[in-house]
Length: 373
Image 1 (tube, rainbow, N blue to C red):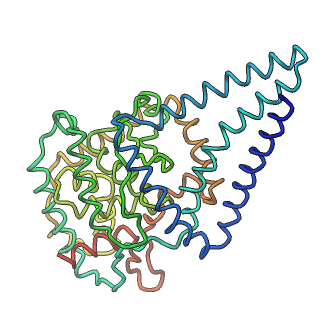
Image 2: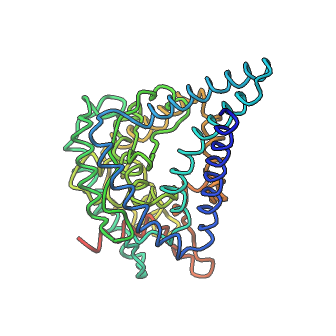
């Protein structure tokens, strides 16, 4: 009987490995993978999110912990049986452990990794040329909005937001912001935003969130700064909507936060990328006389930016480990740049002939909202 059990498990492991091979082979066929994403993947994800919504805590952490415990126990059993000469039992333990690992891996590749090869994200980047004579007006529009946002928020002396964050209310604001991105490229459902029990560890790893599509969850490190929480939530929800590349998820998070009615969300977007506007109105692109017309920003803003930077500089105990595994994961997902891909779209260039600005993707999103409103 134990031999037949081992044979069955060999077949199961073989089928799981074949499924992995097949799913990975689909990455080479964008049409077939996109059809699968918009069909079976989307249907699976919708039901996963519906089921996960009934559980208020992170199922991802529970499932990962259970898998680790079970695999460790099976590994111990394998070694014990091996040393006692019970070879068939040892093989059964090993095969069962392999199944416990392969099943979630197959589900993850099916629900997530196919999306790394999708077409570029359909955000409304402003592609019409913008004359440098408009840069001051564009900057001042956002400077005024930033000051208005600051006036609606309360701050600690160090620049952090004051008071406790209503996590559920903030999650609803993020969901509402995401309704702006309604192209059928995106999954129509949204991952359930949940807090992480292991936030202390992930803070030292410098990982602010983990999207896990097999369970329809966007797991958020609650020990992020209050300033950074909305952007992180929007980023992880973007992953759950089929936007897996990190630069794309950042751009989508920025777009929905910048366009939100929530001052908290807009402030989070400004702290992350206002420097793109500051570069636009540097002396490289406009004259000193024009710069005299720039509106002043409340000094608390620089305090906030410095606070966010210093906060993460103070939590680097496991940073190298976090960077290594994140980089490895992204590269095995087909992103050759690895963690460097997070900065995609931020590149600001200058035309070598005219010395005019070649806008970054983030500047194009700033332009889009400016001309839209």
